[in-house]
Image (tube, rainbow, N blue to C red; front, side, top):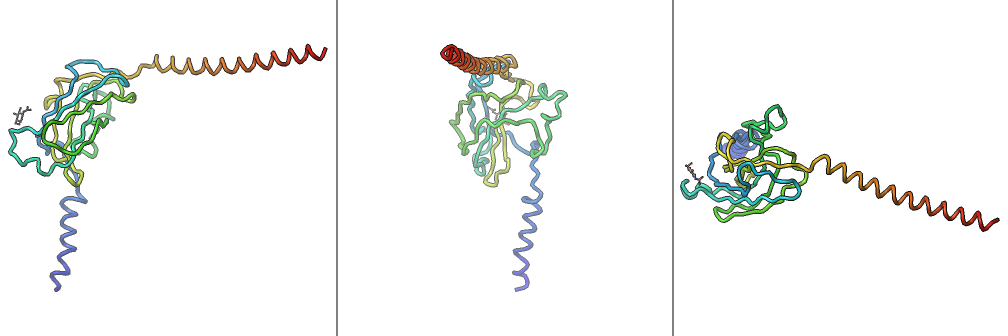
Length: 205
Ligand SMILES: *[C@@H]1O[C@H](CO)[C@@H](O)[C@H](O)[C@H]1NC(C)=O
């Protein structure tokens, strides 16, 4: 009786110590079991808000069948290679995935399937100008990373592409045209009232 009363609390404590409370997942602990390819050619420059990326991913069959039995979802992300991280602490790679800033832009999340996965994504307008690669994380049913795959090598130096953000010139042109049209409407009203006053004044004479 005494024993059974202790069983549940100690089980909870144990699972708390091993998984839930101390849930640090390191990138270096993950196996690269996913094969990921993306449509941009090395060095290609994509325009944010316009150009598209097609990503395909699958389970690398050289790993033992069943390795992926715990995979539940896959999330594709746009990530910064070292060349984009120089002097930018806010993009820093940290082995603890909760603190890692390598992959900040989600492309898509999908239920896991071992083959024939493909997704086409228009580079969003808020993606900053930089060099990128694509990484896929596999998550288990607890939403914890269990594997990955990426379009570049382990040094994150090959097969990179660039995104060119909407330039400052475009933005200021947008603002200029908005201001201009607001000014035109104002002046239209202005002329309208001036004209009215003039006609009223001439009628009163
Ligand atoms: C699959 O994994 C093996 C072992 O890690 C690796 O040598 C091979 O290059 C991978 N295949 C692909 C297509 O990435």
